[in-house]
Amino acid sequence: MKAIKCITRGLGLLICLIAFAIPALAQDYDLVINNGRVIDPETMFDNVANVGIKDGKIVAITKARIKGKQTIDATGHVVAPGFIDTHYHATDVFATKMALRDGVTTGMDLEAGSFNVKGWYDEKAKSGWQVNYGTTASLLYSRMAVHDPETELSAPIDFKDIQVYAAKALTDGVEGWAETKSSVEDMNKVLQILDEDLRQGAIGVAVPGAYMAKGMTSYELFAAQRAGANYGRLTSVHTRYHLLSETPTEAPIAFDEVFTNAMLLDAPLLMAHNNDYGWWEIEEKLQLARDKGLNMWSEYYPYAAGSTAITAAFLAPSEWVEKKGYRYEDTIYDPIDDKYLTNETYAALMKNDPGRSVVVEFPYRKAWMNHWLAIPHMTIASDAMAGVGENGKLLPWDADWSEYRGHPRTSGSRGACFRMGREQGVPLMFTIAQASYWPAKHLGDSGLESMKERGRLQKGKVADITIFDPKTITDNSGFKAGQHGIPTTGIPYVIVNGTIVVKDSKVLPVKAGQPIRFPVEAEGRFKPLKVEGWFDKHTIGLNPDLLEHLHDDTGMGVILEGDKN
Image (cartoon, rainbow, N blue to C red; front, side, top):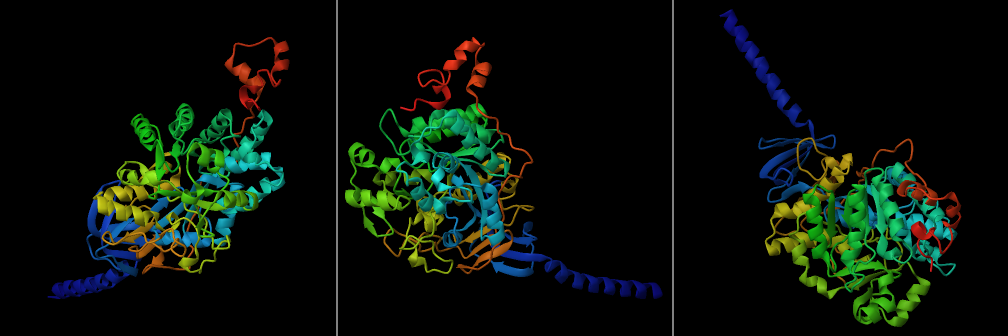
């Protein structure tokens, strides 16, 4: 009998311990997402489940009922890996707020990049940032530092600063960064800057080549891609013939230029906004490249209009009006002044505000957009612009959405893609892969550890999560003044590194973002270009007396520098 009493007393104690242990274990989660449709493109998991999050990581995906310090009921909603934007010029607080409403958890400017990468990351870390952030070493800014010394570049800058520095570069009447060909000495200075930024952890090299088509020689492009390849990192390229459809400057020819370099250098390649003429040829070649094991992919945004700086070479009258046959009055819209340009207002802006961003309409895109929704490894990337108001100045974080003046893709790219995908019957798994998984996979395959644990909804991965209603998610922004920044709806929650940043469709003043960056290295990998060294390596040798002609304008010196005429 005593033994039975002891057993009974022991069982009672055990039951009490279990009763106390259950709520203790439940409270061990920082955040729980219950009853959502969990979708993970990497594993093809698609089921209703509960997600437990602790210390910024996903620690449980289960059918069992769980509780946490915070709980989200995701009934009727998709729980997806947070959306990743690799073409994100919106490096200011208001534009970032718009991106969050569009489901973005990571925004990286890989196309234009930054100058002084160390300082750029330091500034973001000091101020705190709402989404994860990353950047590349910029060939544009590196060329500006060398060819436009009047800009006095030293402090960290990125795309939001382009207006100021483009104007400074024009003070002598020449945009050196865009028009001046580099000598070997110049090239070495440019490459040194790129190498230092790569040493400091830049994700790769940014080559907005269309803006430098006149000044950037093919060898300088090759050397810039090699600078990134020395670290095993990508080049993100806006090709020099982007938009062009006439021979001998068809857009795919410029892709072949960067593709050949990347293939020979065994380096990753990201084709920026491949949503213009020749995209079909480029996508076919990218697929063949991936079939051969090469790490190459592309981006698109779902709009028939683009946005760029007024100084873009392809907008010059000789190109846009005379060669293409377009009229400014029909195709070039100024979101700041809320009107289309004329020849006269174009010339005035070129003179007085060369950094001004304008919206460029391409009617032929409308027939193409639905195809982009269905192309594997073609990722959604907004080409988001800075969050400026009608005076051209950056808006404060708490500005009204209607105050934004810019391209609606900044606020609605993912909302538009999910809406269009729903209308066209694109599988939800596929659209999520375009928005989250494929950008993370390709960046992770380049060695970027922080991307290997994002873009997935799996146990052990970072809790960057976007929760949306698949039946209602939609863009709302448009091209009329006051509509540019109207946010996407149907995304009630966005979680960054385990922290709720969007709650009930309201952006909270929370800075949960972390740097997306390679580790800083102790030493750089720059090796200067030498004309004599080129011949030593690539020929059987020459009479030393002949070397005196290598730097003559009419001699072999042009092998690296290009003809200056």
